[in-house]
Amino acid sequence: MPSSVESEIARRFDAWNQLQSSPNWPILTAAEVRDLGLYGGASGVWVDKERTSDLIEHGVAVGLLHTGKHYDDDVDETGILYHYPTTERPPSRDANEIQAMKNAKLLGIPIFVIENFHGGKKVNLAWMSDFDDNLRICVLTFHGVLPEHNQFHLPEDSKAEVKLFGEKRTKKVEIERAERDPLFKFNILKRFQGKCLITGLDVAEMLDAAHIIPVASGGTENPENGLLLSASVHRALDAGLWAINPETLYIETRSPGPDARRMKLEVINLNTVSKLLNLTALSFRYENLFLKGKRL
Image (cartoon, rainbow, N blue to C red; front, side, top):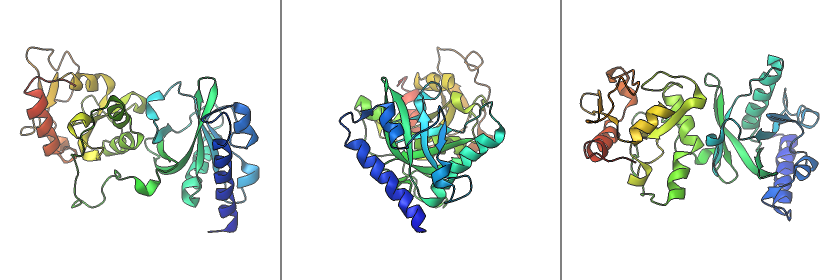
């Protein structure tokens, strides 16, 4: 690794230590963030080209501002699912910012994720873990959650063990964290190619990564335990209004209750996507929740 890259990594870790030693930590002022050179723009991705363009073409992203205005559900204490910038600026500028983020992954350099938080700035040190240019999203994990620690990448080996069950999480905070896990959502978006399984909706900002085996029942964040659903279809699933019959792969609706047409469930026969559906997970939900009339 070139010494210049090593120096940049060391500089960022030094800035991270300075942030944590601030009397204002963990909520910092905008001035503190700017004085350390972690951010210098108004929104989106901050690339200090003067300092990083010598490392690689287009430089390396230093800071990423998450305002929370549009994608509040895509960030938690473990990481962030970040949507590529699409602005009214010249397309090349957006493309260069995306490349600068990818360069951070290529060189193994962390990025500072900055959130607007109660009038101040909440800062995390993050690693560019993965990205998908077709979906125009990337996922970053925060300091201490290195990319190689992500256990839920899409399995490359079809024979790899699929872990659908883990320790039950009954505390509200544990359940909410798992349901908002950016890594899980990223993997589910990739698995289903950015389209709702039931409606075909392909607007990433309107889609949820739904656990088939609920977190409270021990369901894991393995991609095989997930479905990509529009928000309304996800709510109907959690309300026990519909489920997938694991034997026929047809959608069944609760009786009495709204039918598929009323809930706008456009795809009823899922046999054409059977390779994306884990029968063990579907059986658990169908037998333990749907047939027993339970809801989450």
